[in-house]
Image 1 (cartoon, rainbow, N blue to C red):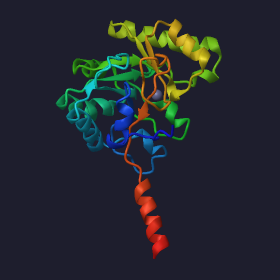
Image 2: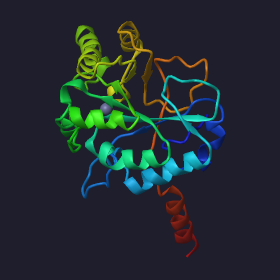
Image 3: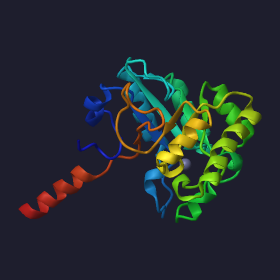
Image 4: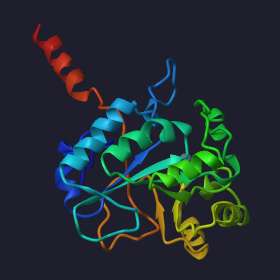
Length: 246
Ligand SMILES: [Zn+2]
């Protein structure tokens, strides 16, 4: 099946979304800064609002990634815990009865996404503890995303285990609630990493593999679509066609 690469509006996804639980993945809810290297990690708040409004008006319930009820629902997920999620996304979500989970990097709370600078991206501010409490007070959830955001399949197994286990415990100690959901940093995982996450006591783990989740989907390999701005594919094709015609 040739699945669309990114989510920007509901229409092309209707036929996929009726087959199970779709999960959308967001990162930074702020306008793309000039010269940004990895534009797909930004989403303009106006477009975010458009996407959430469309799902709400179409009758989707907003659920946690673990919930496979068979009802018309979508799970909204945020990776990394950016401050812009609190400032730009929460006011939008509150207006549409939308709740979402944010996967936090336990050792980077109140700091920046420094793992991005190493890859040519821009490190952006991450929520501190009071901001995360505000995020939760608005009805949202938190999940774990390791301690330091490594590529788990590429580091020694003991270190990967420590990143997963300590990342969970630090959040539980700090916020006083069970942390049951996990997202693989960079969407990077393999069988051994998925086993470590299960052994750590999580109930679900989100990948960056595209697709909708059915009842039979492995809860440690949940599929997601990255939501972002619309691609200009159709416009580009049209321009090319004009070019050929003229
Ligand atoms: Zn991440």
